[in-house]
Image (cartoon, rainbow over all chains, first blue to last red; front, side, top):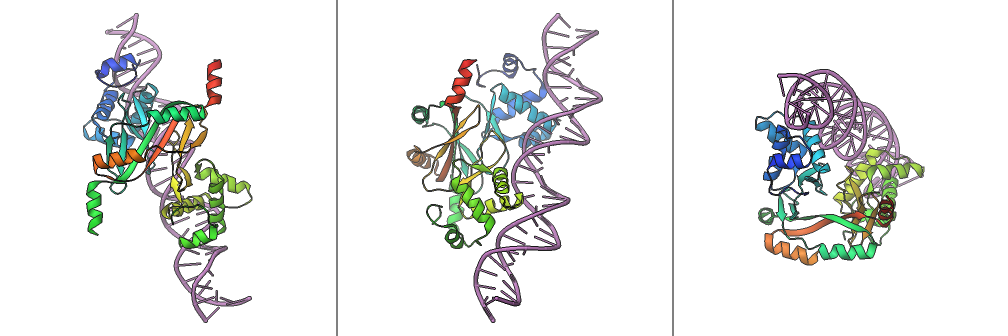
Length: 148
Length: 148
DNA sequence: CTCCAAATGCAAATGTTTTGCATTTGCATT
DNA sequence: AATGCAAATGCAAAACATTTGCATTTGGAG
């Protein structure tokens, strides 16, 4: 089983051949709670605040191994040059990014299955996935901008 | 008019309030010829070869001003950490990336207009655009992998 | 409890992108 | 065509994000 759905962390780590460490638990918990993809630095800072002493390179290494084990995916085709990370879930969603305040919000339902099949036919690629990000102005920023 | 379609460079620069410089012409030409988004470094190296002496920071600055004037859009692939740049065209396309050899190929036809409208309704965002990347194995890599 | 490979922390190295500043260039104006 | 000035450029250094080397610590198998 590839995805992080309903499983306790220890069981998950063991099934992936990973040691069950404090740091990995913390990072995984943060990612589970997160509603949007997080940068390595944000993870590092959040854990610093929660007393935990983790080093930034450990955060990167944990994310790297999580990716290798298909627990996490890199996400964000985005503007800033920071890589963001999120859990690899079965139910896949996309992100709506406010171009003004940069707020990120998840959008469920993805209309691309049929499209992938069509592209597969047209290009002879064997399609394995896609990333989609949608940009626009969130309701709050629309109001702010209208006032000017 | 926002997009780079049929216009000579000088006219385009003037209409955007930009000086018509040798470097900007070279960068714009390269982007016009490119079939896939280019990194700043690739642009720099290609121009070096073509005798032109440009500095890497100038490449970055030109790309920055082209983005500000809506001539260019960033289109970073999440896999590598290099930002890529391509012309902002009216006819919009997406990219198909081989997860094995990293080859990039454009896909025309985009099925997302209706979806954008639906998301707009659902979220009250005012949608301005999206980025889509599709991943898979290209025909050549499929063959190579089958052999093993 | 012991032991060893795997995980971690820290500092230094890398690779990409940005910035400061002195010099050059495009172009509007004589 | 010559002049002046803001904008553009080159180069070196700075700023970031990410990765790596190495000495130390830790999880968990035996």
